[in-house]
Length: 149
Image (tube, rainbow, N blue to C red; front, side, top):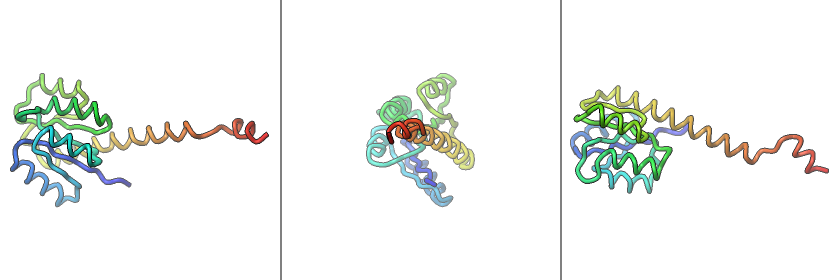
């Protein structure tokens, strides 16, 4: 079974370093990006299942990054993370395709739980796609018999 690959995207270096270290100690495969552009570059090169994305960042903010991720990598699950949460930004994020929304500071266990839930959602979607693709190539017994004549 595939292991979850996660990416943390935040402009706060201390948050990235500390959270990455704690998650890795618990056995998670975690990459970090200091902003939206860097996150998109990583997504071009690596398979990532779950992105934990800060809303407030200089340059390309979290909502812009979320929209770009969902356009270019629609199966990637995104959890929005902010210390400046407003109902409006939460609604915008969810409308734009975010899986969930967390407030900073968030506990590590809550972050892990949300990431695991997002990964399970990714896994179910991947299975549906696999099934639909395999059905496309499968023939019914009637079709097989017809071709055998």
